[in-house]
Length: 484
Image 1 (cartoon, rainbow, N blue to C red):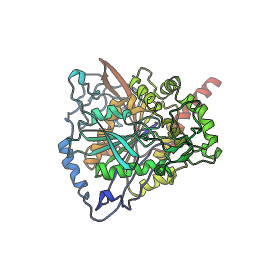
Image 2: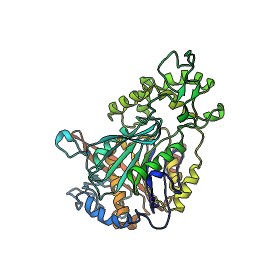
Image 3: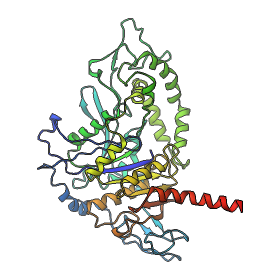
Image 4: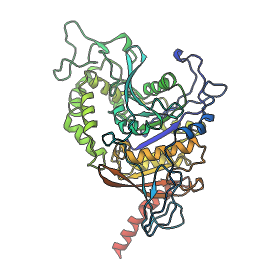
């Protein structure tokens, strides 16, 4: 969606028996903008040595470090971060704030492109796996970089309507340096049920979707295992929690994109997303699902969420179509749409992150057509110390549209945390510049040509009022000039 938020799980509480699922770890999750799962605690832990491993990890898994040089171009007025990931300052341009804050140039910085195995590049292989969380509830996930034993683990959480496949570009690239996972939320992707959660009458008179005879969830009563099943935010929160505890088994960086819903529908119909669907919802779904699952509708949505229409989305399109053809897809979609609000509000989730000192990094597509950057800046106003990177051009899914940039920023942010701040954040030449608003044009190679994306870092001195003023001031000046 509009934000890629990263959360590092700190002070992971020791669990004597991971299989027992008995834990008192508090969970925090967000709403609308991103989902964050947080565990905190105190006391001894089998994972209490995680922080002491950071510097060891840093030495083991860091990419090759190259001192960035100011090439023989004119008008260069900044020295870029010398610890950055194979990046080079190329040149600059006038009339904007520099990276160092000492001049008025925007540096052009060359960053790595995505690895291409067809050209002989090293690409992390991806494995497809299943994890049985509960009876009849099997979670599909993909992983890469399992051999990077001393590297930080990273878990990617997909947006609404997609799955782990949406992070293929991260798994192939970042899996070369880290242990990486991406999972499908229950009710989405390949984590749909393997059998009908409802029972039908023997005479077969259960309601169907527009004459279809192979849809699930539209029977007359719930199967025993699905009596309390609702594809909700709270279910996904618990799913992530136990996945971290039982599969990853140590502190993890979480990276989440989008994941919304429409809780307003629950006010129109007295249903909380359980199975089977009530008759009123079935009638609505007969109309709605035909529209939602239509390939033309899916194609149009993809055009909306990607600012750069030259981005290849054929693979994403085909995987979404494949999911809609699953017999459980329609009822699962209805359960998600009508599920009740989460137990915690969005502001409560942010407050818990602050209380537990959870480091968060925000990345936003400036051209997001659905959830405008103003929502991200509201988060930034509450979390002043959180790095905020505004990427342009980029829409709702910057991790798939400009993965080169997102991967570069994510690597740099993780390295900053793993080094306890001794390595500066991406776009900053030293840790003392965190208060500045900084811009840079990141350039990278893609399919034989060079692309350029502007990234603006908003520092800890950011205020929502100053940001709004900077946006409205040019409009006011143009209005005054036109009157004159």
